[in-house]
Image 1 (tube, helix red, strand yellow):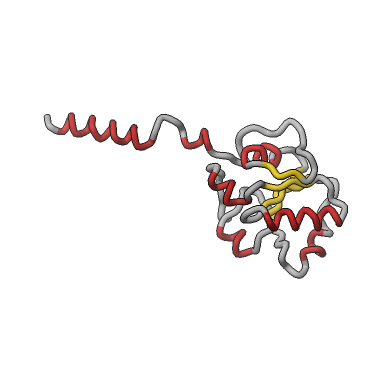
Image 2 (cartoon, rainbow, N blue to C red):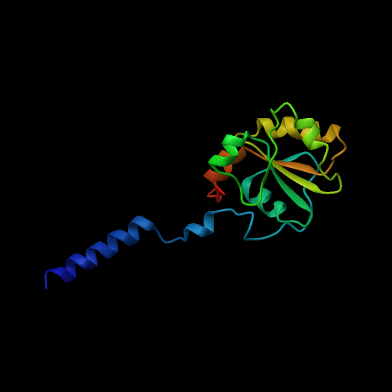
Amino acid sequence: MKLVPLAAALVAVATLATGCSSPAASSVSVTAGPTAASAPAAGSSLPAAEFAAAAKRANTVLLDVRTPAEFASGHLAGAVNLDVESADFATQAGTLDPAKSYAVYCRSGNRSKVAMTALQQLGISSLYDLSGGIGAWQSAGGEIVTN
């Protein structure tokens, strides 16, 4: 009989510890959730939720401009890795389709801005980046994959 009050107390503590909201309610995703109705302004920096919605638009390529090691440690689902600091960045970037939109991100937001400038010089105009980089994405509850 003493187990029933103990069990009830444990359930109450677990409920308080997890809170009333669902963890998915505060997370952002490039595979689930809303899709932006219109493309963001070229060259804009978007907070995580807006970036996620915009990245789901048709003909949008998710572009991770960090190093291959950083990419392997965790990236956004479906992202393509193109290291902005590699010697052949311009050559590889030259193969990108200028008719597509590019959702660009890095670790903190600095390299994505460098990459966007370089991509604009190559004739790609539909670009935007993740404000605060993957760090801001994770802080917003964004999903990361390692495959």
